[in-house]
Amino acid sequence: MRHVTPTRSLLARLPALTLVLPLLAVITAGCGEGELPDLSPTPGPPVEATPVEAAPPGPVTVHDREFLFLSMARDSTLIVPWFFRAFDGPDRVLRRVQLWVGRAGSWEALVREEIETAPTRSPWQILPVPGIRPGIGDDDRVESLRMSGGGREVETRIDAFVTDWIPPGGDAVWLSEGRTLFPSGEVEGFVVEVNRRWQSPDGGRSDWIFLHSGTQLQLFLEGTAPRSASQASAPYRGWSRLAFQNATWRILEIEWGELRPFEPARRDIPSTWLISSPGGEIVGEIAATSSHLVVGEGEGPILPVSGFFAVEGTVGVRGESFEVVGVVRHEQR
Image (cartoon, rainbow, N blue to C red; front, side, top):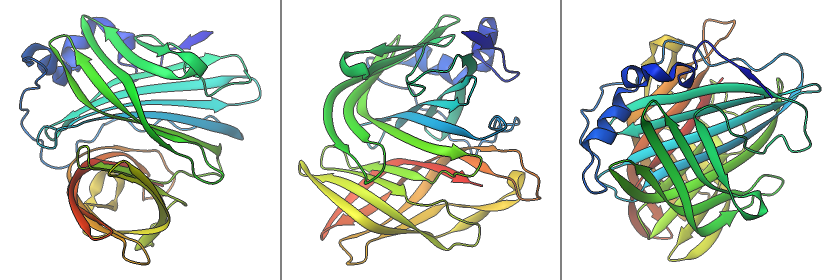
């Protein structure tokens, strides 16, 4: 296995972690018994100066495995996304690993790593990279993800299985109870594992959304096709768990409500989302409370955008209303 040192790798500069990871330093130093400190909200979307890495040239199959930790408490939201992407080419597998922490309107990219491995029959498997080590259990299921280096540690543990959703012709989405641990305490919440497979360069990725109201309602929404710049709304499908009962929503529509200009990409981005189903059994509106967006490379004046929105709002399911918090995984090409 050959390690590639990308120019933007954080863990490749482990001695400087205390300088480049200020958010993590605050979290680990300021926690009480399982508590996280209040962090001052950052107005507007934080933007990374470096662009998203382009896919390797030529046709490849891309495997995404995304683990999203979202804290249970609605008044103290912690978001920890761990993303693993493998580009499966004819003579190599290029693997990219990223880790973020979002808290109280502030986001920080903690890890960006890239390695190359030999071709394999299971390119979707998660391998250790510098600073990040997965804990693998029975049936090759991921049980934990741990980041350590420079005296800093973050670990997400996947505990009791809650449910799974398997779309027709798609990859499974797993929902579990989980915890994220810092040296000074732990935070309880949900872990959503999203598996997706697509073809590059012709294939595309669509947004997905996870919302919850605590233990009452959990809702996962997935776009069925990438949204074009001119579309006012896009088709989605979804799965809900309400009062321990699963339901499938084959046809949903999500419309971008309010938009605002995002000058680094020279395009508009959403700040509210309107959710509806044809029969009105699901209706809701969510709004962004913070965001972490990265501008990609492109040939035209309008550039692609990738990242996250932390959101909150209200969703009605079959006449019952819920206050929800969650995350939008966002892509605009």
